[in-house]
Image (cartoon, helix red, strand yellow):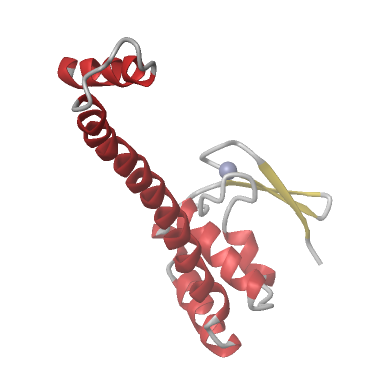
Length: 146
Ligand SMILES: [Zn+2]
């Protein structure tokens, strides 16, 4: 590492012609600078490819499934929701929203705030309103009972 620093100093000095009369200095410096530029290009390409990869991963999930296929997936997901994570709930919510599937009663199976599926929540009924307290974040969801 200290060697590379010396090369950089040589470059800055080499730009002022009086200090570096040696003609061999310039090509030598440019040789040491090239990998640095390459590193920068590689770094930026890695970052961009990561971003594009994420977007490409999301698009087929949202658009390539037909509505009936998506509905099947949603149905399957909610059949054993209790061992799902909030991340998976978020994913399936997005899938349902993008393929115009209504969750209806299914959305009462997980917390609206933290998306954690209800395991054994506190449930109370008072004056025709059912309130369910999330065991994870404590948010109380209230539903009218018809
Ligand atoms: Zn919650």
